[in-house]
Image 1 (cartoon, rainbow, N blue to C red):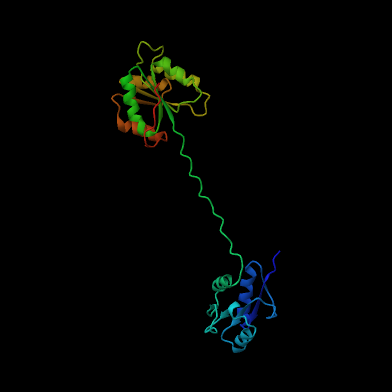
Image 2: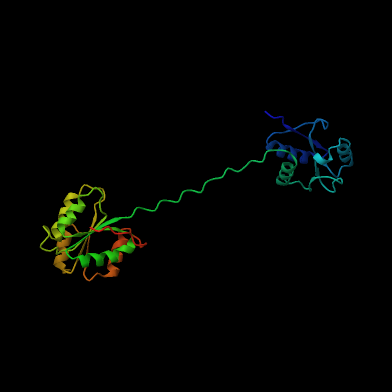
Amino acid sequence: MSEPIRLALVGLSDAERAMVAAVAASLPGVGLVQDIDRAQFLVADAEHTPSVKLVLAAEKLKRTLWVGTPPPMGSVAVVDRPLVAEAVQAALMALLPVPVPVPVPVPDPAPAAPPPLQRALLVDDSEVALRFLETRLQRWGLVMDRALGSNRAIELLAAEEPYDFVFIDVELGPQSTLDGFALAQHIRRQHRREPVPPVLVFVSAHASPSHRARGQLAGGDAYLAKPLDEVELQRLLLRHGLKPRAAAPSVPG
């Protein structure tokens, strides 16, 4: 363990001595001594002639922090009166060989991971209709699969990664085992135990009150009419927590 830096006070008022002593105690490896000859560094009163003579006689001019002005010619450190603790501390740290704490760099916090993209399944019997709907949904950050009919939709729905949204046309064509209403009922049965089942949205040219009622009975959460109303679609997506963003890549179904 290295020897402490010995500091002595020469002159100064009682209040000034108390302040300097407190500041010195806050510096690492610095200790006060009474004997000027044993001291390595001094804090002395520049306005007190006996103190100035004592420092000069001890040949420690370059190792003295002077309080008040003017300090003797050739001095290297001085603080003005009235003393301020911060000024005394800065002057002592500049004069004494005390280690200056090196700030530990604090790494910038890692940027928060963006929320995962939500997934949507689009079900229709028309490839053109599927692509049209996909273009309307791309700016909402959805990762989309397309299913041409109910049979392909059931295959995709059986995959391990669940869908957050399923957009279903009512008429799914003769190649489909189920129409849109029956497919919605199938989805509700298969996913009823999930903490957050998918949002089922009917998108159909058949938008009469009776069709809307059937969609609700089949478990649909919303019913959008064709041709698609952009405002109505936006309200629906905002209501379910989506926000417009850059278009997400689609995965052909």
